[in-house]
Length: 407
Ligand SMILES: Nc1ncnc2c1ncn2[C@@H]1O[C@H](COP(=O)(O)OP(=O)(O)OP(=O)(O)O)[C@@H](O)[C@H]1O
Ligand SMILES: [Mg+2]
Image (cartoon, rainbow, N blue to C red):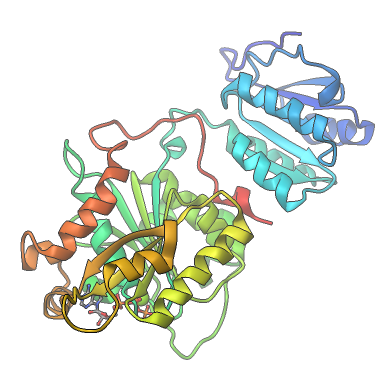
């Protein structure tokens, strides 16, 4: 079966709905009946009953599936493999177990919704995923996330330096890079860079849909190097958590507009933490050279693996490492043994250098070119950035969506 063209000259879009559910069909027809620009094609079938649906020409596919039935998931997997992410597919089901949600994410489903789906939510989801993949919004950032195993390990320092390295990693000018301080209560990124924090989450919270490119621009701070920073003013006496929808919307938007995004994470596990970790391309746990520091790093690696499966692959960085050849204390070999396969690197201790960079609000490289901390970070980070360097910003069909990971 072949469906008509995706966009006719009047800009009409074709929405293909695969469903065996009468009630869902009726609600989709009701949701889209008033729009003259949407051509609706309903294919009455269970996903697993047919393998011959040609989706060529569809702008968006809504696939209604029985998520508890493996055959249905396999059928969707085949559709996704054939479609190669174009057209984008929105999965709909009565419920999604966490394992199913993860599987859908791995298939790169563009979004998933739980029935009954309010018409407005369905329209919004389709509008969002239907955007042309050549839009700036569809570009895909490389996300580097730094998570602390213990307090004061150096997460902010390493996140700031990584962002600077990524910024300067482009072969043709600077790669657009955004550092996001997710420590809403005790953030330090803006202080370390000596810039004014401008993110006002309370303003966005009542109406997250207002957060668009323009509003994001207002809430970004800019470091003289060209680094963009999303950071909120500190409210040390205010303990509050933000709606995960606001946070994921913000992160989705940031990741759609930059080549590289670096997250400085808090130690507390918030409702949006899973989403950030699942959406990260590179996840670094930062700890210190003490026995408890190593133990906590190890425990955090295990907790993430248990909680989030094979998605994010945590790698441990031991910061402020001092090589001790003839005196007692932990050596690199001990560290490697304690951390196991998640060990990534030891970053050397150089307090005077880090202090000066922080006090002046500049990268370490500017204080002391060729310093050991930057060299070590370069070795660790730049190979991961290589895919992006020298290329046009990715216009990949797959859109990075932190919102997918919401449970
Ligand atoms: N490689 C290093 N060598 C020497 N000092 C360092 C190094 N990395 C960080 N520091 C110092 O350690 C202290 C803590 O660093 P930082 O603020 O980056 O840690 P953090 O993990 O973000 O802390 P917090 O838990 O408060 O968010 C700072 O005084 C910083 O100067
Ligand atoms: Mg910090």
